[in-house]
Image (cartoon, rainbow, N blue to C red; front, side, top):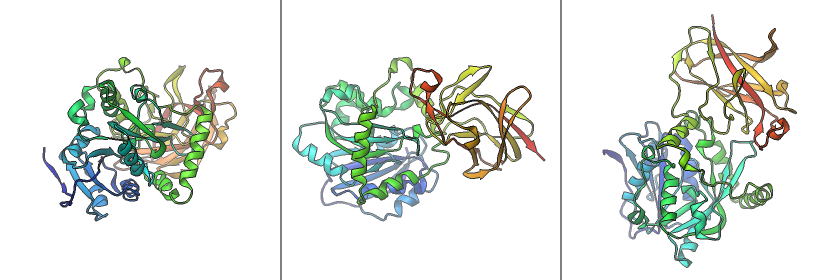
Length: 428
C-alpha cells in the first residue's frame, strides 16, 4: 500500500509511549486533540498521526505544529475504520507502550502521567484510565467507563482506545486490529475482547483523564465536522477543569450513569452490520444526492440516527421522536432549488411546546410557521435555499425534552417532538 507523509527524525532513545492517532478528514478540527497531547505533563512520547486516506486539509493542520515529536502518514485509500490506520501506526511505533487517541477526543494534561505511574508499579498488559463520554452538546447525556477494580471487568465493560495503553507485544499475542467489515463487534470492542478473553491483565488508574466525543453519537458528524466542544473542554484545563470533571462524575454516580458502557449482545448482529450502522450515524453513508425538480415526500425510515432521533414508530405514518439531543438534525439529500419544506409533527411530548421550537438551515435561523390542516395534521413549514452541490442540513431547536415515562412508557429516553413525513416543494 502506497503511503505518503513526513516522519519523526531520529530520536536518541525509544520513547516510553508511542501514541497512534487515526483520523479521516478531520481537517483543522483535529487541532484541539493534538494540543491536548502536546500539553501532557509526561513528555516521553512520539505521536504518530495516520490518515485513513484523507483528502482534505488534515495534513496541513498536523504539519503546522512543526514538532519533532509528531509524524504524519496517509494511507493511499480510505479503509472506513480505525483498524488499518492503527495497524500502520503500530508498524511505525518505537515505544515500549502503545497509546491511542481518537481524532475528536481530548486528554487531560495528566493522562499519560497517570498511565505511566500505573505501568511502573503494576505488572499489567493494559493500563486503563477513566473516560467521560459526552453526548451531544446540551443534551445532559454522559457516561463514565474505565473505573474498575478487577481485571475481569474488561470482559463486560468497553474502554474506548483513547483511554488505554498496552504493552508493545500485546499485538504479537492477540493479533492486529481486524477489518471492521469481517467481524461482528466494532474493531475496538473486538480488540479488547480478544485481549480480555485471552487472559491479558487490565488495571485502572482510578482517575478520569479522558474526554470522549463519540462521532457515532453525533448524527452527521463526518458531514459537518466541528471542534467547538473539544476546544471548550481543552480551555478548562488549568482553570478548574479537573474539579469540574470530578463533580460531574460524582453526580453521574448518583444518577446511575456510572460505568454505563457495557457490551451489547453481539450475537444478534451479522459481520459488518454494526460497522455499516455506525457509518450511517456519522453521515459517511448517505442517500444519493439529487436535484429537487418536483414535489417530493420523504417518509421516516429505519436507519439509525445517533442520539438525534429515536427509532422508527408507526401510527398511521412512520414517525421518529427527537431526543436526547435538543438540536436534532434532518438531512435533505437535494440540491439546486429554493424549496418550501413542510415537516409533519406527529406528536409533542407533554410539557414541551411546539411554539418554542426554532429552525436553522445550515446553522442560519430561518422563519417558520406552524399550521393545523383540515385533516387534523400539524405541520411546521419554512423556506430553505438548498445547496447547489452538497447536502443541506436542517436543525430543529427543541428546547424542552421530557422522559418517555411521561408518555406511560417504561424507559428513560428523552423525547421532544415526533416527526413524520417531510414534504419538499421547489419554488420558482
